[in-house]
Length: 384
Image 1 (cartoon, rainbow, N blue to C red):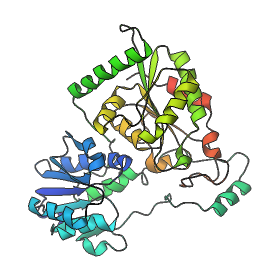
Image 2: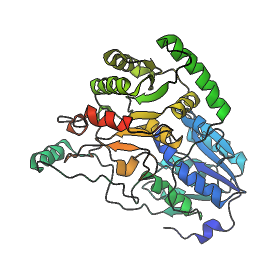
Image 3: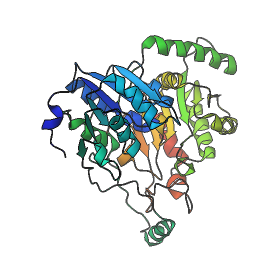
Image 4: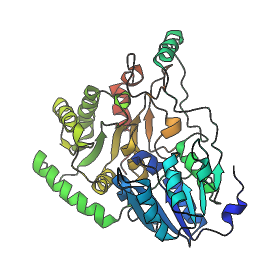
């Protein structure tokens, strides 16, 4: 790791944090932001992020300002907007060359980030990446077939988080170069109560009108996220989701499922609702980021694949039941390792995690997770 002395003298007064571009990754950076605020309570901390996820940072006490950029906006245009800010330090969380080039062009005097090919020369303080035993290298089809052919009948799969490799620690190591506490804390996002209550009232009215629930009866809200942007290898089968919705609804009592996702998943959510026969409010493609956050906060639990919404719910304090197959909870599990509110379900297979978008064999890592296991996990979550 780089020497701390030159970075901390003088201490940052105006600190730019170059944020990551994806929702789940952004949530996993919030512990590093919390540690920066603890370390520099008087500094002005600004985050630079893509406009599509900027609203998750609105009103967060760890930040003073949010700057955004749009898809297709040139690196020179972004740098021109950074220059008037007179930032004295930039902490660069992504590993891309572009994210280091922006503060370099803006002539920010101290630039800290992980050393990578084609960008280390842009940094005044390159930090050596941590070497770990788990990476996101995609397995080849040949390797997957070999592993499944040679595997023992009952393979053993690591199920505990390894603190050194989770992405939370990847970002905490960078904040530690500025003197931040490297000890892990849970990702956290806050929303004002009045904003949540407004969403609750409007959604409640829609639910009672659509499903004819008694206006005075208590009603459990359960979140459902059948999506996973990375690809179908991360998605538990829709027919299984529908069966879980049916079983849990029958045992839990009056409940409504809020189905989230992009507009492209609206048909999928309709199919799940139809097959389950349960009250499912299809919100796919209908919510802004802030509305999504507020509704997740109101849910008793979220059933989800490994995805950005999984991280968002956990950071808002909503328990999650998360289904993992092609990816690794050691790297991207929800919340903080060991949090008993969250339930991670995975099946031991010799080829998982493969980190592929599509499964080249029989999708056994996901199809082996049973409906009964998922239903039991959901019913075992205590109301928040």
